[in-house]
Image 1 (cartoon, rainbow, N blue to C red):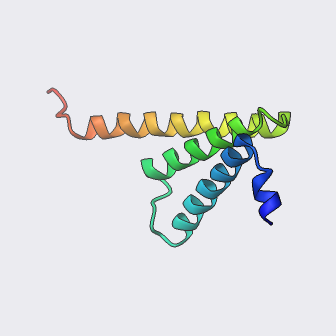
Image 2: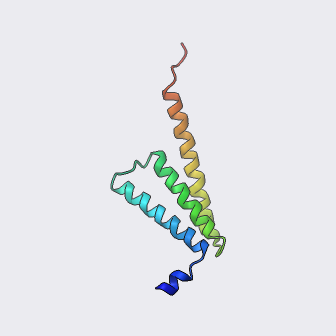
Image 3: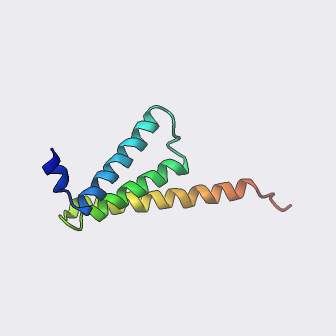
Length: 95
């Protein structure tokens, strides 16, 4: 086990961190500690996908890279859309 851990690269560490963030966010969602429509869940997924994407530098996999890039884009779009709705709620509509 020690040899295995000692053999991990920086890219492996990024991949494991991404895995941990993905799993933690999904677990928190299932236990209703996070709102699936909230910014925290979206940011957690963006960070997780980014970490996994960095890990692919060492051992590239096109399908996995496309999934991570898509996850990042969808997360950002969701955050931007939420921000727009929140801005609209605080404004009064001119008569």
